[in-house]
Length: 394
Image (cartoon, rainbow, N blue to C red; front, side, top):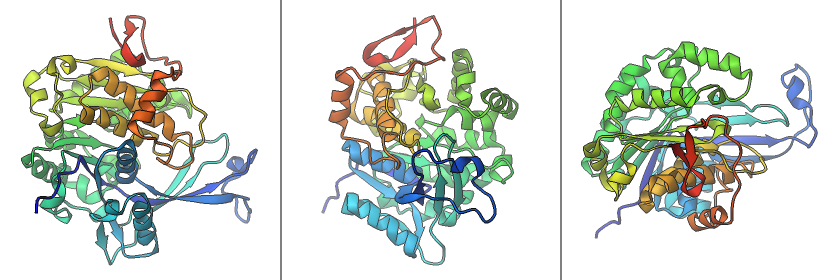
């Protein structure tokens, strides 16, 4: 019997998110950790979290055939995660890796009104996830996407040897590969890692590299990152970069070998830079764009869409799902960038990571109806607006 090849296999960090609610007007964020203090909260949201869940479920909600692969324990939290996936679609839980001797990863996410969120995280079996955990049959998707290696010890150690091996296995099946990152604790082994050595080893096997710009700067230029943190003073570090600086970072990363880099810019939107090398684009595997010349050398940016924010957990992962959806649909680069910021915006209209993401056609209808954009301070005067509200250099 021939088994249908799924659109996407999404692997990497997975956890159970426990998100307490705070009453309107709560001042809990001012003195959250005070010994003996009782803090009133409302009903908690229990959600699957991590890149695997956030990007995988967003792609599923957009209408793509997805397999989700993460490593969990055989415990209450693990069963809760399986139940969450099965409630979406029975097959989403089918490829999960069960580690009976480890406790499932979880995060307690505190997001009081008017304060940036705080996360308490237990890494669990994510630390032992390895290429050998994933059968060859599982890596049969047209796309293989991996998320958050800096939070997964076995994946980031030895300069990413395990991840390189996994991606090379995926490429033998003709898959397009994509990679998302996360910012590690500066005092952890991952925070002290030589990430350029990791990129030299891993990025030649990656077609689409989609990190947040601040976490990437943390890895490749710690002095610049520290300056951005000081300038931002608790705000968005990306807002304190110029477009020329962002483009230089993109060129730096493209030199390691990916075909395209897409940077999440927080509330400033999304930036895309594509290689000038036509042969590299043509070697992207199953999701090679049908019009290579339209994509070759593209340099684009889109501001975020206007929404009323309920919570920002997972918005960057949903942005990635929207961009990858554009590759699945064979769109041009402008539409792919526009569709990146759209599920990212829709996701923040709810408290959890992705239940606000609607089907692909519903997002297109919202765009066609004139979905307004936020101002973006990063777009310089020598750029001009194009189709779908996406900007490019004149």
